[in-house]
Image (tube, rainbow, N blue to C red):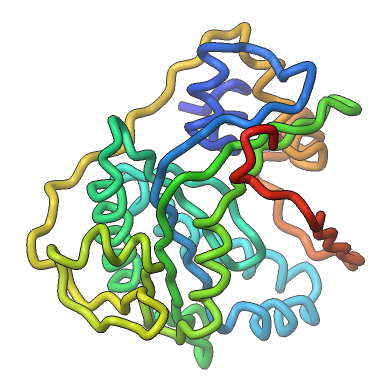
Length: 277
């Protein structure tokens, strides 16, 4: 059975934001930042940039092939994240960011579930052959601790939810020394689970995960059931380019290559640890 518009929009929005809409079914009138304690998994695919350049040169056929590969690789990641109780936060190019909330302050459990998911994703996808001579490899970092969910926007019917805080900084730092096939844990994440796993301690206080010695039983992510009146508020978190395709009934034709100029803006001086952030 085909998904209706509300269900389709939900597939583009993190569960954490959907849960917020159950409490407040509208985009905030002013920017807000809400505290969150969680574990994060950042999984980056090595080899995707060269693959994209190769397929882009093949025009329409290359775009269709890229869509098949994305469905194969990212679809499997999404399934495994949900099977391990995680929440897909978003994608940045060929990287996936997923979140495990520390319900009731159980940060250690959240980190372990993120770590178990990282092992499962690596086993399922490492060395995946996507074309005859192209194989993909993952490098994964798990971070943890206190952060904030910042909800900004409100202009031209567009809103955006950002994760900010030290765990994101720790992931960025650990990623620099994480190679293909590695699963690195930030110092906070490593300290939370080192008694339940085997691995290598690193000079910065973090660790390289080998295996979990006392695994937790699987816990599938619970789906959020939103009432129909949340549809308008939900749609503001979906990019306009995607919404226009959905409105045109082109759900099966979202893959295409475009020539773009990307701009990255870093706001220096913001400290998410300040209470007035």
